[in-house]
Length: 476
Image 1 (cartoon, one colour):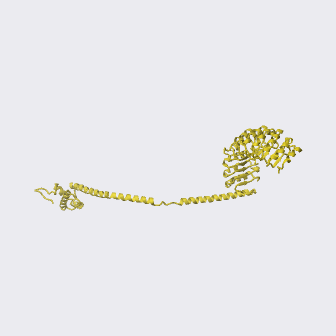
Image 2 (cartoon, rainbow, N blue to C red):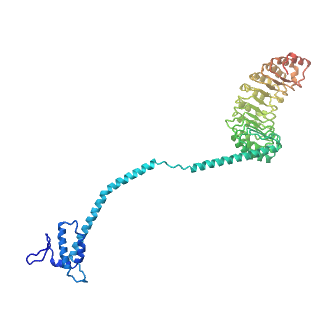
C-alpha cells in the first residue's frame, strides 16, 4: 500500500525511496507498464514486489494521460529494463539447468544404442558376393574351352601335315624321314610344335633340302620339352644350323640322342654347337659320323665331352682329320665311364694314337662295341693295346678290319682275344698279315662260347689256316 508522511510525497513500501515527480513522469507510460506487469507476477522477490506496487501506482497516474500524447523516456525505463533482463536470464538459466540434467540420461541412452548397434552389426552375417567368383569360374571355363578347341584344331592341322607326306600323325613320334621336305615345310612344322607338346622323338633325316632353315624349327622346340631323340642325319646342315641347334639345347633338357651324321658342312664349325652344352648335360648318344670334322673340331669336342658323364654312345667315324687331336680328346673321354659304344672308324688313328686310346680302356668297363677299323696307319699299335682289351669284360663286338695289322699285332691279339668271353662278333678282314699266323688264332676261337660271327676275308689265308676253324661248332 502506498501512504503519505506529513507533508511528504508518497513513496513505495519498503526500504527504497521513490521520487514522486519521477513516478508521475513514468506513469505517463502506464499502459506499457500494465503490459509488462503481467510478465512479472510469478517468482518475484520482496524487493521486486515493491517495484510492482510502484508500477501500479504509476499506472493509475498514467490513466489520466491524454490519448495521442507522445511518451517520453524516464529513469524508470532504465530500471525496468534491468529487471526484465535479469528475469529473462533467470529463465534461460533454469531451462539450461533442466536440459543439462536430462543430458546425462541422453548420453547414456545414446551410448547404449550405439553399443547395441555395433553388437548387432558384429553378429549380423556378412553377405557374400558370389558374383566375382562366379564370373571368375565362368571366365576360366570359357578359357579352358577355347584352349581345348584350339588344341583340337592344331592337332587336325598336324594330322593333315603328316598325311601330306604319307605319314601317320602320332603323339610321341614325328617321323618325316626321307620325305623330300623343303624349307617351307620346316617352317610350317615349326608352327605346329605348339600342338605337339608330348613329342619325344623327331626324325627329319635324309631331307637334304632343309639345310639352312633349322632356325624355323629350333625356335619352337621350347614347346616340346619332353623331346628325347632328335635325328637330323644327311639334312644338308650348315654352320648356322649347328648354332641354332645349340641355342635350342637349353630348352630341351631331356634330350638324350642327337644325330647330326652325314652333314659335311659342319666341319670347322662344331664349336657353334658344343659351346651350348651345359655341365649337367643329359645327352647319352652323339652321332657325328661323316661331318668332315677337323682337328679344331676335335679340340672343341674335347672341351665338352668331359661334361657328358652319361654318354653311352659316341660315333665319330669317317672324320679322317680327327686323329691329330685324339690325345687331348682321349684324356677327357676318360670321364665317360658309362660308355658302351665307341666308333672311330676311319678317323686317322695312328700307331701312337692307338696307344693313347688304349690307356683309357680301363675307364670304360661297360664297353660293348669297339670299332677301330679302316685306320691303315694304326698298324703296330696293337702290340701294346691288345693286352688292355682284357679290361672289357662285356665286349660283344670288336672291329679292327683294314688296320694293316703287323705280325706282332696278330701275335698279341692271338693271346688276348680268347679271353673276351662275351665276344659275339669279330671282324679282322683286310689284314694280310693274319694269314701268316692265323692257325694259332683260329684254333683258340673255340674258347669263345658266345661268338657268332668272324670276318677274315682278304687276309691271305692258307690251307692250314682253315684247319683251326674246324676245331669246334661255335659259329652259326
